Image (cartoon, rainbow, N blue to C red; front, side, top):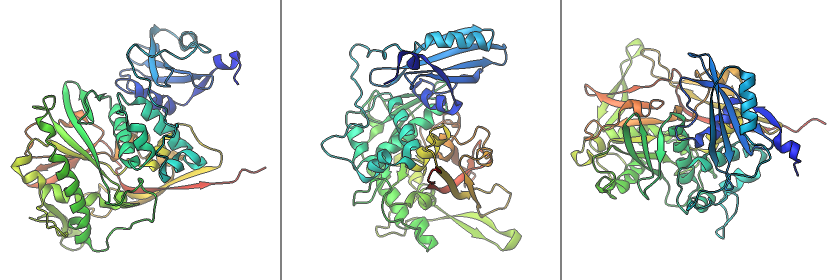
Length: 459
């Protein structure tokens, strides 16, 4: 048991760990024009805080978060301007109140169920993997912080995460992290849709859904499913039909007719968990279905170029009409948001980068990068250690939650989504009959796997 002195001991933590805690803030870890100068925690993490530097004014400020009795982070103090980092650290050490009891629950607020308390339905294989293996300690810490950052999860959230809705609930945590990371206000004040997001006056309602198989899957445990060898099948066959069925089923619920959604942008966010590994290769089928265009290549040698070939129907068993975005009945659907990164691998990497690194754990990411060279049609292979400087240098601020997030805009949308609402996503849109993309990232990973190896400690 920690002594009183240990509970008051302030120690530095890395910026990325504090940013993970700060997902609980309304605007996430975004403090412009200031930036994090240094970050700290008290004892075993009952409080954390940071010193911010305003480069324009040359002054410092402090921000303190403390745990509530249900372990949620709450903002308890913001101080400044302060004119030296030493004075800022003194202020921070006082306001973190190491050794004090956790913050109380506000009146009328329900205590959040603990993530690790197993209910009568037991746990899925994936939740067991998450909570009982050293190789997934980083993911467990990241999942826990994102769960605590949720604005208002429904009463079944923990039970679902622990059992056969693991993948769907993990995808919701991933979306929250993506949105808060980009400074969006995120609310869950209605039963549905799942999220309301807002930034600088622009808003959107978002309903999350996962494409699952008819046999319950637990988010990825099982025999690895490889992509169909036939390219047409991969683009317009069963994978495209699976997306189509999932999206059409959600659209039948008419979310746009709800009083709080009417007249606002509305999007469906989808991830593919129908088989272990499917999220690595199925993304190409989604835009094929949405825009009714199959990505083909024509020409030889230096004259090769990508073209969009119009299709009227998918080639799967049910011959579903292609081109959801061509249908004027769905102008209320502003966009479809997709990511293949709402996975344990992503949470494991983000927890690892935030400093939770079990001794002996080596993490390597292998995959393909989008080649932005003019005329290039093939991706670039990569394989890098997640903890390496080379890996982090792929992006200006290192790996971020939102780098794999894609927004497919409906050209017929009655209420379009401004690109600036979700600036860190890759945006796909139609212009002059072609589907183009816009992104802030020089390096975009199209698909990847994360390899884990636990080395035995040397005695």
